[in-house]
Length: 130
Image (cartoon, rainbow, N blue to C red; front, side, top):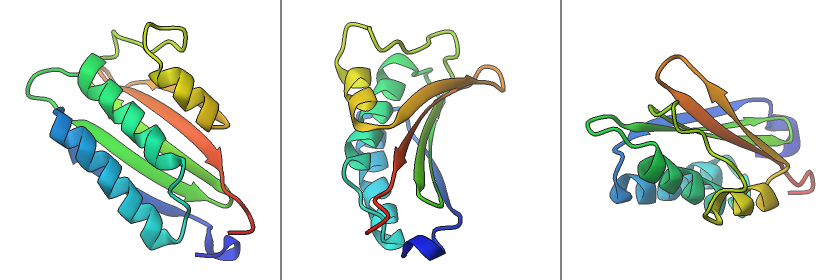
């Protein structure tokens, strides 16, 4: 997919809130980005961190998490939604995960709702030469 054809591409999948679900999120993201012709580095690492955070800090037994990918023009947006809106991520927290996400992306944040959901998102500017 060259830059001219990167108008809008969407992908989403619901996955179990388990280590297997987090691993599958990373694998599916890589394959989807590859099929779009979009570089999957460093997005692969961002998806892995956000998915692990969702299953570790956002897990509610019996509820899944949602992985979403969107390409619009030269921006890749990664979204991971879970059902623990009462537990918001903070970059200065005890782990290194969100510091890694912050370092690998152009911007990231959290969107609340609909209750009890929160979505942690990150955006990367794609190399226009690829």
